[in-house]
Length: 329
Ligand SMILES: Nc1ncnc2c1ncn2[C@@H]1O[C@H](COP(=O)(O)OP(=O)(O)O)[C@@H](O)[C@H]1O
Ligand SMILES: [Mg+2]
Image (cartoon, rainbow, N blue to C red):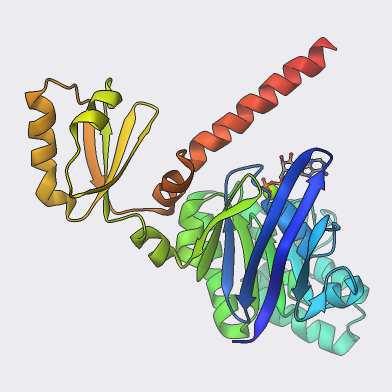
């Protein structure tokens, strides 16, 4: 395996906050690698350090064998970046936006024109190439940004929350583009997301990140298999009683979480009636019970005791408190 990205003990502090906390991993050439975690987990900070936009406080990283601190320009020439705040020029056409980027990278005119045409075709924007970006939908803009990020033929492409704010259909469509890109061009793609489905569907391997730390890293398949079978979710007013009562050996793990008991077990269909009978015989209330195959959300829950959704709600709450405090002073 040719190593595209090597990260060792990479750390970034902002004053007292450790936004990225001694993370280590390696990404092979051609992989689609995902950093999955809730808002504030440290995903963008990690990507920013790899893209040389932010200095690490500690640790090292190389991209395409080039050290991010020793040779920023070298790294920058070999990567493409599509970040949230990297915007297109609204008043220029799709083609002009591409052309502008190509000139920045000093790509000779003839090669530039050829590549722009090829990339616009790849993201299906050829027939809109002469329209100004102002008239584009969110999905079209994102596709154009990705095409632009590829113009100088980077070996590694960084995508920060590539489908944030897009509707599910556009999101699905974009996943197909990204997968095609990886397949046809063999470039390494590192993306961040807080959509577990995105990480699951698109990535060869996923690092789950929470509070700046990698808490699990593997293929989506292995991560899901690791939690021990199917997932049964019981919604109840007395989750504590359920946790006390269900002590069966076929239960691989159990988490109680905000009015829900989440149980992992193999062959859940065979045990579900037993669960219901046991709880009913003790008069323990059940509002609902459901079975599903494990998702990366279940993996996140099993490692952190929280869902990504809740973690985000928590952040919103922190932000709200912060705003209130600011108002008072
Ligand atoms: N420039 C900065 N100054 C201070 N704190 C920052 C800065 N950038 C990010 N942070 C903090 O670092 C943490 C990680 O942020 P970030 O990497 O943006 O998370 P994510 O991309 O996973 O949502 C958050 O708590 C965020 O508030
Ligand atoms: Mg981010």
